[in-house]
Image (cartoon, rainbow, N blue to C red; front, side, top):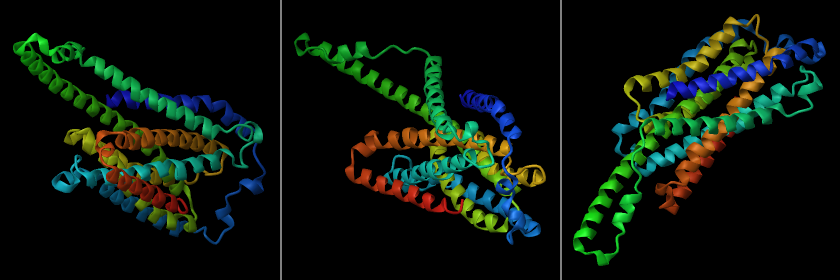
Length: 365
């Protein structure tokens, strides 16, 4: 299942880039005025290559450690009784982390995409005449729904068609006039089928949790590589210094949200280690890639603006869907929170705190 959802996601991003190739060519043929698109850090007191390099080398291990801590905290929560998935505290922490992921999409990724695709360094036609950011984000959200739905359908069918509970329901609701023996048999049969249905529902929920983890990690990874690439290619000390601290908090809280989902997916140790590794290393990898491409990669070049802008828009749509539908709506409409108004209100407060804290961080990252 994970490989299929990842393959679909990779195909979608490839199609996105292929479709944007004519637009990239058009952008390169219509350069903007050099005074508008020149790198502002070159003439700034903030431009300091040795200091910027030192900060970036510090950022790589710092962000890596913060990411590992954030994503591993929920995984180690099994040893803490109060943080078990069936406890209220786990729901509160997960609500906080879901608010962080929601704000990441709305306050970090989406504005970056708008800034990229409406840059004066791009020709007004077609980039100024159509909202590509909102359009691509909408398509990404629909695509995420499609992957979510189809993966569950395929894997539920793969497990084989178990007999439906209709006969059991009929047996369990036989009229009393039929006698004690038939009523007793019907009740026992109904109880057995109810247990079987409960087990099947648990398996379906587990499959759903695993799809959620894969798709959510894909959106986070794309965003992490892009922001790491920008940091690695920058030579502005004034930009990098606050970004390092902000990215540490950003990765830690975002990792908590992903770690909670990994915990509920009940993967084996190998799969958990793989998911933790990919999440933790993507931003440091992006920084290292930016360092290697410093001479070639320019944030304000038309090609970079279009590719990064489209990837950010797709990532934003994916994160919006996952945070609202798969994380928040699934929990708030579930029996646990529906059974307690007090817990609902506490979790809503946690969502607002998580989203609010990440929104404040958008000032620096």
